[in-house]
Image (cartoon, rainbow, N blue to C red; front, side):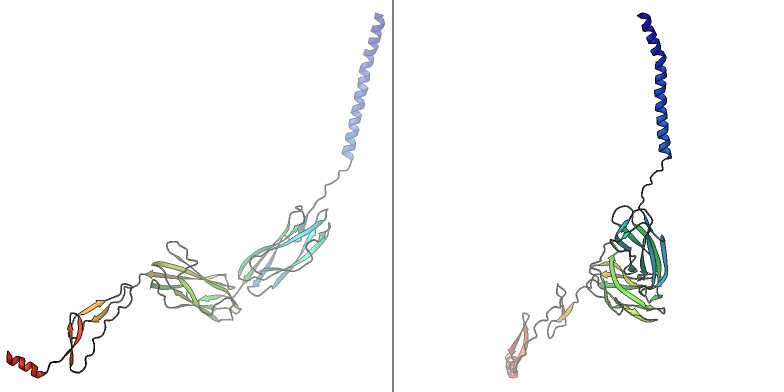
Length: 346
């Protein structure tokens, strides 16, 4: 029994390594087959969502300032991805009022751009003032993907040269509460194209740093340079200014003229003035009466003119005027013979 058992164990011992190897080999071939299948199989690419303009930026060049929308360009918005995109909003960044405008567009809100398709938008440029301008045209999608498509826009406005007769006005010293004489500024169009005045304003301050935007001592008193004024070639207009200080001290101001002139806007004129204490009230001399040479000086504490004393009464015939204790009286004249009697009695 013992030897039989040993034979059986020996047989098991010789068969066991072979069986384990066959199982292990089978597993290795299975893994290799799976790797070959995984590597050789084509991979599926992820869908992309993207769009863009046919150009990243555009320069309109020069255009006359204040001449309206004169330059235009057509832009193409293209779907360059694999999924459809729905337009939700059109944004036009304006450097100033009416400098850019969409004059025609097929890229409307709600439009679905399929992959490979595009739509067109026409933008016009018309600067109000002279100088370089920048803006942008942007489209947003209904979802956050893709990000907005944007094109940068540039241009420059040019206008006529402008002439300012006085770049600084000095009002000098003015008493508090008083008003200075009117001073005039002349604005001239020194070019051949129209000069457009968009507005004239004045802001004041004192030299202690307190702004006087709502209580400026400088005021625009009139003139022909007003909002909407258009000056033809070599024509001019005027601006009138006043200075009325409300307290003592030195004051300054800037008159700002908004226009379409070159090289830029606004034009400025500096104003200066000083508020001083008002003069003391005027003294009035009042006569003391007939036969006196002294004068009494009378003045009102509030600076108002003092009242004159009442005039002496007019005495009738046979009476004469005499002053007694500061008051005038009419007394009866004594006859001449009465004086003689009194002198003889003496």
